[in-house]
Amino acid sequence: MPEKEKPVHPRKIEIVDAAVTCFLERGYHQTGVRDIAKQAGVSLGNLYNHFKGKEDVLAFIAEIEVKETGHFIELLVEPDDPLAALEQFIYEYAIYISHPENALLGVEILTEAIRNPMISDVFGKNRTRLVDALVSCLNKGIKLKVFASYDDLSTIAFMMLDTLEGRGIRNLEQSTIDETSIRSLQSFILNGLKL
Amino acid sequence: MPEKEKPVHPRKIEIVDAAVTCFLERGYHQTGVRDIAKQAGVSLGNLYNHFKGKEDVLAFIAEIEVKETGHFIELLVEPDDPLAALEQFIYEYAIYISHPENALLGVEILTEAIRNPMISDVFGKNRTRLVDALVSCLNKGIKLKVFASYDDLSTIAFMMLDTLEGRGIRNLEQSTIDETSIRSLQSFILNGLKL
DNA sequence: TAAATATGAACGAACGATCGTTCACTATTT
DNA sequence: AAATAGTGAACGATCGTTCGTTCATATTTA
Image (tube, protein in one colour):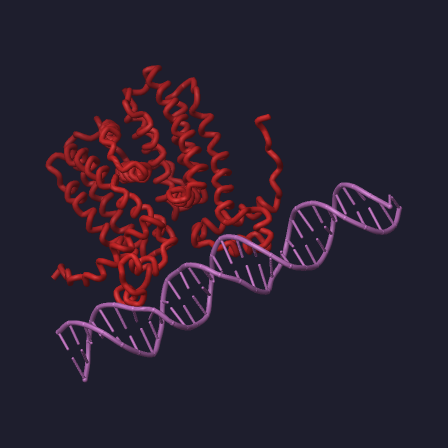
């Protein structure tokens, strides 16, 4: 029985949504528990009926992010065409991370993970999954002789993620998605992998 | 008279050093003004004789970081050999950002800059200078026909910085500098610029 | 030179606000 | 009646900042 999937109390989801809004607006540490409760239209005490504390709310958000990145992993594992898969991943992940909520929440979780083991656990595990998937895609490409061989594939994988996510953070102010800069990023990375 | 360079009160420097220590240990928002004062061996009130407030301390730190990156800009502007200059920049910046204090302070300043205009000013100006220098180096390389031509050079420049800095953040826990991963990063980037 | 004055570094108590959390309690549902 | 959901006052701690004060040194005046 790998699936527990016990239904989440709707109020809990409302609180999480409110927390996301607050964290995006003011950041994790600048947001008070009262802010979250008020934003959710819920009493302060009731928030503690659904979460152990403020930290628990952030951990829950981090877990949601994990689920959302599952799609990208599916793209990358055991692809028939590694080049096409990587191309698609870069493009779709760039779009995903272009949404301010994803980019900003990512930084918020990352910085908290630096010093908070509980958050680091959730965040790090997901990051590892994504890197492993990227590496396996690269490996398959190398085996099929469509990618150049590199000693340190995980460094290349991390590089792609850093690049895409850094771009997301930088484009926070502008709401429009700059397709051309995504394309040039894509071609640069793929060019580096050429034989 | 472009140079003011009025000497900074030694106590002010002590306080900044203490603040850096605290910000690294606990992060900006988790650090209290009392923590800084105590770490500096200075009274709470005296701290306010040297700084307008907590925010002012961080801004001062950001300005110091700006001065430290001046060296990298010199490497990149008007190079005789753009390829060698870029090679050297990547290597040296990777080393620089491998020091936890630089990597961590960078994130701390970056995340604060997202919502704090005063910090964003200092940080953003410096980032622009660095990117401009990188772009000018790339441009010269293209003109000299040692680099492949790209439409969006600043995107490539940002990509390099994101990559190098992301690597710095990720290697926070391990104190040793992984030379080989720097080299593979270097060769990947330069490979992407090959004609 | 001696006295008077101005300077500014250093101090820590105190302020009001806010922090995360707890808890006694009421209302609703099963 | 038992369990669950919801409330907001209250707690102790800590936040960034302000303030009145002390005191050693430097500058000015007599």
